[in-house]
Each structure stands twice: as C-alpha cells, then as structure tokens.
Image 1 (tube, rainbow, N blue to C red):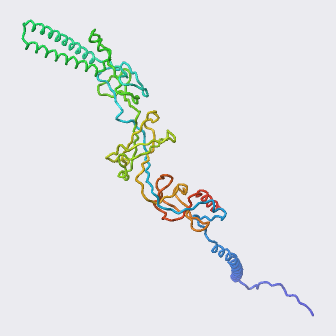
Image 2 (cartoon, rainbow, N blue to C red):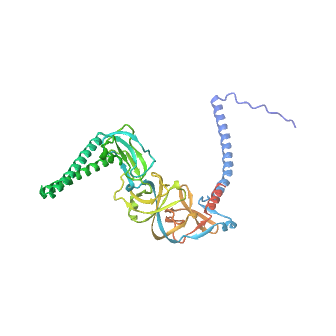
Length: 407
C-alpha cells in the first residue's frame, strides 16, 4: 500500500487580514474560558471545606473560665447574703491649727522696729518679747504717767494736811471730803496712765524706774500673748509698724483641727458628735479618732462641698498644719448585700466578681460596689441575694482566665 504524504497546511492565499484577526480572537477567548472554569472549580472545591470548618468552630466567651476538676479545691465559693453593714464615707482633708488657740500679735504704737527677736518655728511663752519698737507715742505716754503720779502725790499730801487741820478745828469736813475726792480722781488717772503704758508694751521693769527715778524707756516691747509656736512673721528690722498691723502669728498646736470636704449630697447623713476616724499618711499606720464638732451651714460654690471638722489632741506635736489627711465617717448599720474584699477583681478600672455557673465553670461579672467597711464592700448593682461567687482565690482564677484567653 502506497502512503502519500499531505502537503503542509497553509492559509489560503485569498484570506483577508480581517478574517485572520477574528480567528485569533476567538481562539484566545476559548482558551481563557477554559482556564477560568478550571480555576473556579478548583477554588470552590478547596474553599468549601474551609468555610464549613469555620462555621462549626464556636467563638470562645472571654468572660468564662473553665478549670480542671483537680483545681476546684483551690477556690472557695459562697452565696451573697445581706449583712449588717455601716456605710463608710472617705473624705480628703488636712490638718489645721485650732483657731481658738491662735493669736495674731501686732504693735500697739506707731514706731520703727529696732529688733526682731523671734522667727517662724520658735516656741515662745506668754509675755516673751518678740520685737521692740521705738516710738514717740511711748515717750508722750510716759510723761503723762509722770504728771499723773505727781498729781496723785500732791493730792495725798493735801488730804493729810486736811485731816490735821480738821483735828485742829481749822477747816470743816466738807473741805476734807473735797480733797479726798480729788485724791481718788488722781489715783484713777495714775492707774489709767500705767495701764496705757502696759498696753503700749512698756517693759515690766521699766514702770518702777519711771515712777521712782523718772527714767524714760526708749522702746516698746511687742510680747506674746499666748504660749505656742510662731507660725508666721510679717515684720523686719527697720520697718515702720502701725497699730492694728499683724506682725506675728502664734499658735498653740497641742490641739489641732482636722478639716474635711463633704459632698453636698451626703451632708444630710452627717451629724454633730458622730464618730470619725482620721488617717494621716505622714504618721504611717497610726490612727486618730474624734467626733464631728462642726458642720458648715453653707456650700462652697467652687467645689460643691460642705466643710466639716473634728479636733484631736497633739501633745507630741506630730501633727503639723497643712498635713494631708483622710477622714472616714461610719453611718448607721443597715442590712445590705456585701462581698468580701478578697472576692473583688479589678479589671479595666472596674470591679468584678466571679459567679459560679456550673461545676468548674465561672463567669467574670461586672458589679458596682461601695466603700470598704470591716473587710466587706456593699453591693449597689450587679448581684442578687443567693448568687454563688468565688470569695477566695479570685485573683488566681482571673490569671487562669487570662492564660486560657492567650492560648
């Protein structure tokens, strides 16, 4: 059998360029369609199992924690029950001097300060000289005293002569009475002049010298009128002092005030005589107790608070004015839900407790709690009576939840 080979194919010589372009376009479109169908089929087949797997996988609750049965003994659970609890209010406060034991001292005359003898922090006693003032007013007052003293001496001698003359029947009793009245007036003027000198600050030993020898004192003393500590000095040497101007402040710090700011909403819950506990961070663990001795009748417009205060003994001088303090006021006890402090977990700046939902399963539950009192915190929102919560081991249970969340 004879085999005849075919000549190679060649496009007809009569085909136009437009026909060739159309043929090439159709061929390319068929190839792309075949590739697309293959790719889509492969992707759909591959993606179908993944979608099904995702739909079957449950989403974990971040607030739930499941523990192993052998760990259950590490956590103590108890129901939430009402207890008799007194609500405790914590107030910010400060130590201040007792205003009843504070004196502000100034000069009684106009003059120039020649000496300053006390500084802030010095302990002074009553009558101690704090400063000296040279004053022309003091000189004038001393001359007035000398004239009054001379007039009193003359009146005394006039009365003595009148008594001798009445015995000799030279004058009548009316003359004697007149001279005795003049003597009384002269003595009163002398006492008034002496008191004026004392008020001006004439030294105690200067008055006898003035009366007996006529020696004038050049300066007036500014003296302490209360024993205590100099807390303020507003005078310098060479300064001109005026009557009524404050030069020194002296405070007796053996008894001090503790002043607090009470929110106006809670003002009606506080009464005079109510027990109050004071915590001063500077004293460490030492606690102070007192009673409410003052409740302001007005509200501060800036802070919307009511000022309250108590006073405490400070015999050891441990409390200093302007020290920071915390005041705790306990109200009347009432039945209310409360949880132990050990049951509270702080998460995202909020209070939470762990509620037992089933064996070995617990839920982190947000709650609203009041201030701690006697190791308990009153529940204001988030729990009902009888709800079982973790009262011991909540911190470790929270760590277990976080570990499981990371895994």
